Length: 312
Image (tube, rainbow, N blue to C red):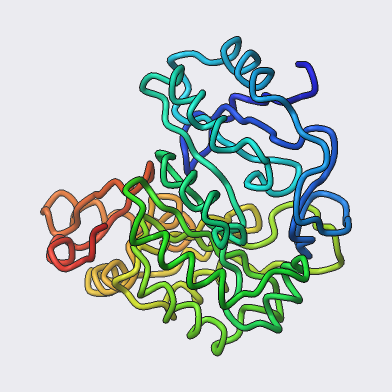
């Protein structure tokens, strides 16, 4: 494909069948230089110097778009919201997308720009990254351009979540020894309680990172998930390094666990032993546990819990 602008489709567990648009196909152009990035380290930039024409993107997109695509995903070798013609591009995609939804994967920093903020409101789905609230930890993990202030970004993330009408996903990527402390998780929890999010995805390093840092285990991610307020729609997104736990859960344990944190079937497969899985099936058949779809994923939670969970 010319310039590799369009890639996929890729079957994403979190977002369905996704056709990607790379808004910086020639080189990495990003306002962050994250420790965990799978791209090679590079100096941060505040704007794109090499850009692709909107007409070229639309031409490529038309030749690859079909009815089997769930989402058109705006991404980049770097940060897609640095693309200077983003607003125009979204309008042009809307003319041809039909029932396919639009999604952007952004690091959230450019929400401080009113034009970007308003452009993202037009999308069907938005995934915002928020790895840390503390300034020192934010700078260590995300290594942002010096113009970026985390306090301003957090304010805009909260504001965007209240104004946005589509599906909003928040992603937190945990790096061992940096943002996995009780203190930082408490700060993240406090901010998340002020947001309106469809789903909050907790992840860790799943691909070879740019810098010599390590992720955390699935078990640690699960333990961290329990530190967040149980009204939050938390989902554990990383499973590449998951070691099966296969623990014994009584009926009461199952209901208590799902009450604290609704789980997907993938989570169940890692956490429960075979006997516990059978008990879970009985509880589902007795309608004591319900299945609920949240942004493309199916979660299990106690029937009594559904009525009191916050919904966007």
